[in-house]
Length: 276
Image (cartoon, rainbow, N blue to C red; front, side, top):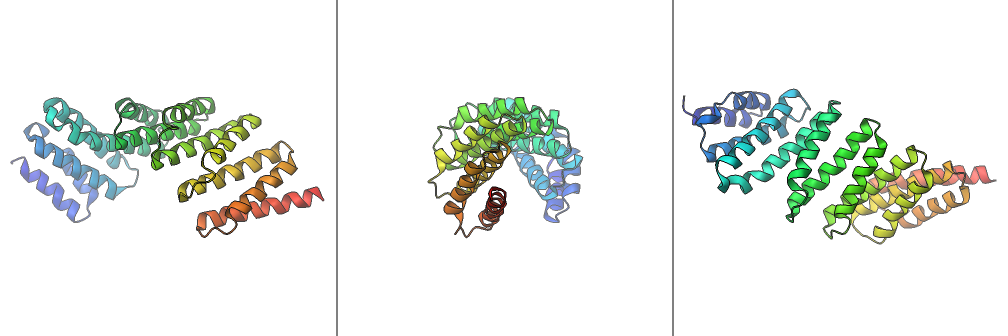
C-alpha cells in the first residue's frame, strides 16, 4: 500500500464528516514513508478532523499529539518546512492544553501551555505572540482550576508584563481579561483592596475604547469592582460604581452588555434598599 492511499482514506473520511474514522486512519499511517509534503498535508487533515470532532475526547487529544509529533519531526528533518508547520504545531499544542483542561487533567494542560509559551513567547510575529498570550491566559485558568490562585496571579502578572504595552487589539483584549481574572483571584484570596486596584486598571486603560470586546471587559471589571466594594461594606462607593456602569452602558445594544447592565441595575436597587 502506497503512502498516498491512507492519506486518501483520511481525506475521504473527512469529506464524509466521519472525523473519528479520519483520525483513526491517520494514526495508523506509517509516517516513515511520507514525503515532507505529505507530512504537512497529514497535519492539515488531522487538525481539520479534530476541529470537526470537537468533543474533548481522547481521540481528539490523540490527533493533536500526532500533529505535534509530526511537526517536530518534519522541522528537524527538513528545515525548509519549519516555518510552514510551526503555526500548525502551535495550534495543536494549544488545543491539546484545552482538551486536557476540559477533562480535568490540569497539570498536563499546564505543561502543554508552558511548552507553547517556550516556543512562541519571544517572537515578534503577531500570530505567535497571540499563541503565547492565549497559552499564558489558559495556564492561569488551569491553575485556578487547581485552586492554586497565587500561582495563577503570577501567571497573569507575567502575561501583563510581557504584553500590556503591545498595541495589537487582539492582545489588548487578552491583557484586559488577565487583569480581570487576576482581580477576581485576589478577591477570592480576600485581598480586596488589591483586587479593586487591578480592576480599576482595566477601566483606566481602556475606558474610552470603542472596541466591543474591550467594552465588555470594562463592564465586567466595573461589576466585579462593585461586588468587592460591597464585601468591604463600602456601599456608597459600590453604588457609585454601579452608576458609572449604567452611565457608560445603559444604552448599549449588545446583548452581553444589556445583561450586565441589568445586573448593575439590580445591584443598585439592592444597595439603595439597604441604605434607606
